[in-house]
Image 1 (spheres, helix red, strand yellow):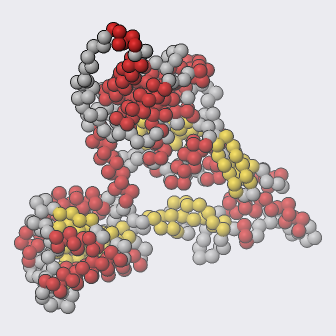
Image 2: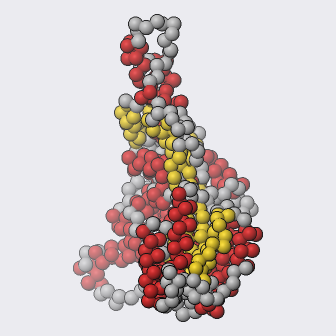
Image 3: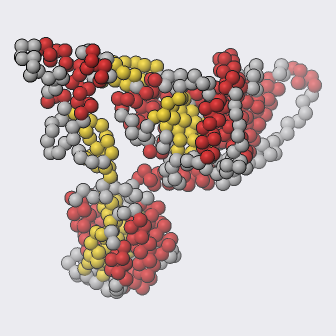
Length: 585
């Protein structure tokens, strides 16, 4: 599709969303800040009635402000608990805009999606029990890079998925929808119902495209009704269904329908006039349904660019990698710094940070009772707000620990003969990547009869390169000694509150035991024991088998370590580097 065609669909999506914001769920707008995005938002605002309630939801909004709860000021002034509506309840009947949706926290995603499902918010806190209506549409602006995406649970609830990143400003022609059209379409919308055959056709198209979510055909149906209302149709027409399938199902497609079925349909023999009359019209209805399926699938296929499915799969893989591990350390609770992660009742000790607002909120409902209890004391010395230790609320934070990547390089004679040069090049590339991410790196080499730490954890890329350049090769393969050294270094890193990741580059053919003695059986047993030690500690490990003929030795060691196993017999330094980065994120 050309940029102009994509922009045309984006404008149509804005008009359809304006007709039924809560019913269609909303729009996932994948776009970085640009004039094109500003123009699309202007089109949306023009399509919405002026009285429409549009609210911005900050990324770091407090839970109490989002869902509602105790109104602190009103409670202190009134001397009794006064409830406050949250932003979701205030948006009832309108639209909320979620900026930087790719960074939504899990808690905020749950609150928003739960309100979308139930059409209300439920608050039970601070002595209050509230149920407030909250039916709204969502505009989720996703500014993520290649491996950053908005939460899948939120995307599944949004009917329209748009990507404006590839549209130039010249393709984005100005268009001014008339809000009166939206109002007329909203008035007509409740009278439009789809037939059972139309619903079955949408479901069949979703199945053919590999879409497993039941929400997709339901949202497509709501878009088809909105399209019919906007076009002033008396019922849902075929063109409404094809438009809905193109806008809702095409961006979710995971597979192309089997080719050839619709290209070369089996032609039934022409019916005899008498038989056609005796069938009572059932066969004719079946033919119409089948034709509708084919029309919808054809519309969806026309809207899917040839390379979009590969992009979707790559995006899904990138998402899983970014969620798994490696790029940053594990999340760790902290009482002093990091991202806010709620409040807890607690005491002011060990540098804990008092959350003044939440402390006042906890104390507010009890003020009348406490003032009556303190009535006998002198009025001059009595404070206006009585706070006790039980009211103290301590701010909690979460921060990611620093990652330390430990390279364990096999510098034995067998590895030096085959792959040590490539391994050095790959380690240098990986070190450069770790330097960009501000991670720390360490380097351990094992050869002869021992393992040696060539580079303690550091961020100095130049120092790491010098250590690697001076790494000689030759001698036996004391794999157990190398793994033991990696375990001890990982343990010390963990004790400092950091997250270790171990990358082992070896051919897995151990021939030197822990005590320095020779003999392959003993060496292999010791290597297995060392591998189990790493697995028992729960340390993330990647084993790159650098042997020209990967065998069972490297795979068995990786299995004992619970490591990712990468047999790369003919890879160069760049391929090795890419493979390791793909494994650790």
